[in-house]
Length: 327
Image (tube, rainbow, N blue to C red):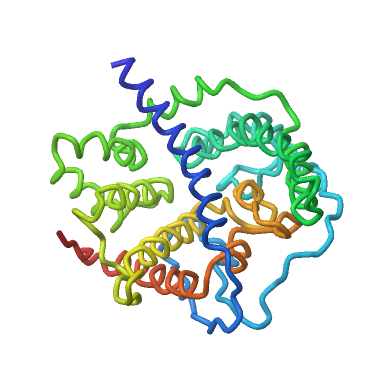
């Protein structure tokens, strides 16, 4: 049992790292201008937990632009006090030291809190080193170099304390209650090897009712891993043409990220999530957010489609209707 627990913890940790790498690669391959995008209204979903006040903005002529120059990042103490009130989301965290100083709070023992601790550890170990290695590498490209230097400045500002044990984080994730949605979602791929019907049923249930962005993303990742054998048809109607299936899946992944960000509060301006993902030149600047990254890096088809799919997912969850399943 102990080995199984460790396996699940490590699997979740690797899933978090893999998700970040996929996100970085996705933004590189999908970069395109967004000129001519029409606005798609995103209806607020008041039934979801930890809904951010900003939500996910639709593109418009007045959309915020990324600053051209990099200014000094604010210190962590100027954004969130060390003796902060009870945490409800990681949106209040701006440094690793704040994680340690609020370690006794209940939030850090939840699946969402543990996921943030895992991601923060990864950022301050693998992520920071990865960016450091690219400072010299990018010297010949001034725009890219400025972006890398800004990203490294964020890491140095955020990673301001010794890291906690990643093994302990793994163990705490593995010890989550077996009814916890993140725990259930983490076993979908393994379950699918022996009981694909049961795995599909659990994934569908999570998509309809989970309150965890982490679990929602893993449930959709399960369907995307089946190579079309089992699919979630939400949003497929918005895409036609020869490359429709690939565009649909890309937009669906972004839509799920949008909902996950809304619930967790982990993707707003100057968030760890955004600074880890701002790999495209000109994006890494104070105030960067995942919403801004999506607007600036995705093609209009993918971005508009993602907004529409996100709205449709909200409707599915509000009405608790069965998602469309297809062979």
